[in-house]
Image (spheres, rainbow, N blue to C red):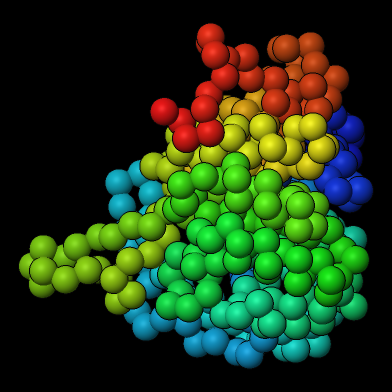
Length: 324
């Protein structure tokens, strides 16, 4: 049975002025356009505070050629390539089918130019979605994507363009495949980002030893799952150092598979936590994580999740930005 989240206000958070019923966010690319898991008995979108829709571009994209997915130790690699029907189809045909009384829906905007990011964001501005996530960190397309996210100047340009295109909250999805994620976050914050999602997938490869070729047709893809959790935790904590004094929230993500994982991200500095790869092998994991968080709050005598965010106590000196 799904958890009746409305009975316990301790799970609720304020995220950029949006009332999230729980701190859980379903990550872009893992739940289609918000309908995929609703076919599973016992699953409810209401157990998530928000759902990030699949990455959307200006024109339709077929994505990369198969193979586009493969399992790896403690994770998986994907190189879908932003397959989507284009922003006009998403707004005109898909958004009207979603139940906006269940949860918040967040658009995920991608592009191969600053102008494309602006235009897609502008079109979502006049739609019922609650916020816009800017994907400047996708590692499995051949143009745009991670090229923007790893360049501080380009990251800021994309955020500034999107800021001009919408009044909705902007969430910048940060790449871990860069030297100074805190510096990038600072630049994006100054350009107008209201929040961050940290982190996107890491670049990875798997090799078919019989063929002596990459398993993924794209040669490389984004590694997700428990294998990246320690990296994601450090990156979230580094970004939190930038966000803390400005009250800017972070969606912490990367390998969360249980309540303890989620709690680690909250303590490191996240206000919300993203669930992605774990859904593929346990579609009913949301209720378990929500209940586990409540159990922890009971044990610790805490009245809200806000008391957890950024409560990490470090040994000795603060961590340098580079993690050295």
